[in-house]
Image: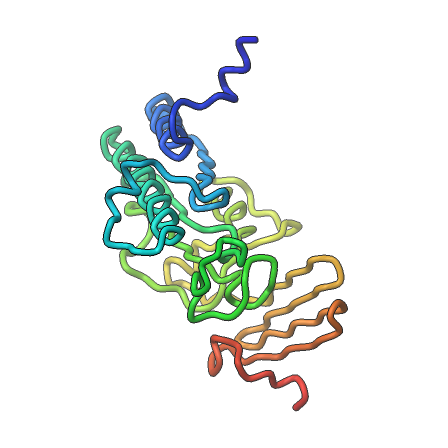
Length: 235
């Protein structure tokens, strides 16, 4: 069927997603748009193009080299998206958020992928949930600012809605980050995570993890112990 063509990307999928994103930007350059671009790199299966692999001959370990090659393709794709915004004259007035969904997974075979932080994907230690979170909007935000305190993926919705001029909603998960990104306010953050019987709360610098399987409790002060080595729960 003709529709099958959309499920058969041309070439390496990271490059294909970049192609499609550039096309979407060009097609919508004259009107407001929302683009959600979810690259697969560097998720498993770890597979790279020969060109990207050969470009990293200085990396001796094969797995690390493939992973690096995937990051190289991701970097190229992000660069093409940013260039498309410039080429179409909408760079200054486009809010771009770059974020990862979780920390690195243990099954990649790369031991120090989350160093210096503890834990992996599927845990709520910082190695599992602390990821890059870059926000860029030349026409609407100060340059080079660093916002203290955590942010959540759920904040993207409220922030994008605010940028689009939507009325503020109180009954929505996440907060509009614009006042914090502009230095007008400090984020009042209490954040919760849950996966089945595994529950976590972070309030300011304090982070409490409660697990039923195994039956464990951990309490950390992230300001003093960002790598979560000193469990204070017994105190």
